[in-house]
Length: 435
Image (cartoon, rainbow, N blue to C red; front, side, top):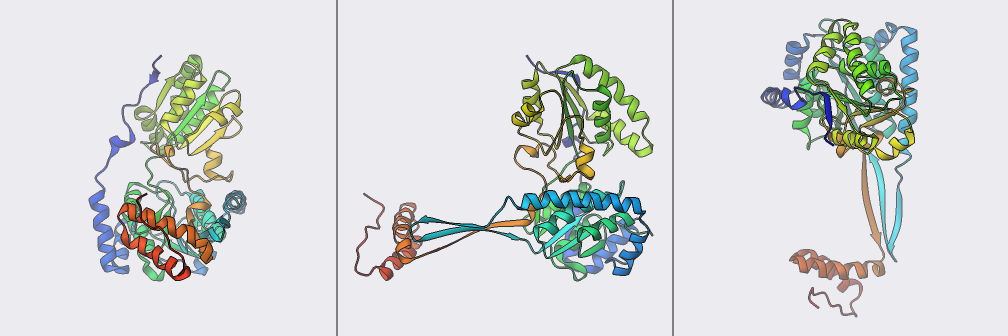
């Protein structure tokens, strides 16, 4: 039976393809050519800020003094949770060595990158949690130098809570610069900073495009689009909770898709009735964002049963996936394509976004089909090594010579030949590919 769409999106993330590429390319090229001066010019133009670009210890302390004690405790609570989870993730990667054949030892080593650039959005919303998520994981990974970069408010600077969070979580430098110019400053090592080996963190379409263009010369966490969320709910779910979760994610932006997938028509219809009511109760820009997102991008899909619900969810591969249904263990075992999974009414995407410990930098636009989100592993290079005794090298050299010659790579074959002749001068070897 085909899926029944009780509400169908009129737009998708691809419908909003803005012409940012040329703008971003020009900015990157100009800053790379002219360095600090060009970055400062763009900062004055776009950030409308002429204060200190790199915050001093005194400025960090002054910002911290402006943060209420209760908020400081909440930031520290979230930091401890993210740190604890990141440490557990790091423990899943270990250095090892194994004797592949007698006398030939191969190994794995995890090496953190030296310098990480963490972008923290600060425009429409001050993303305190993004500072926690990106800086903490880089610190746990063992990065030697961490820059937190966030756009300053005109004539004010970076939000004090972002400064405090970045400092508490381990940032070595805090850069008051937004957009493409901030990304460029970290990548090119401006203002005396080390060149970043990896860029992480969410941002607007200009930041995302800059990261896409720079990928290859620098690592990135992922190429992100608008945030998206899907709720799987059966007849046992509370319609008000489901509706609140959808609205809570729709407020991210006018083009942030939210989807409800259910096998219960009554639940779906009630959620569709409640969502506009909850949106109307939001303040200002939050209401505008959620209204547009629900109107243009949201979908409500009615399925025959839970298996069809799960298959539909996997097909969408959402960034955030919430299950409000019976038999949570079944869903945990069955579902396979999501950035982060929230099982049961007792948890919600906002918990993961802010304070529960899992990372909120996640794959969007279906990328959860092939990748997970930001983790301590993103900052680490998993490299391999090997060494051998002469006896251990012998069978490997023989096989290498024959395979290389079959491929037509004579130079490769001869690197094996020379070792066999040197180590075993009194032996003869059949190093041809035939026979």
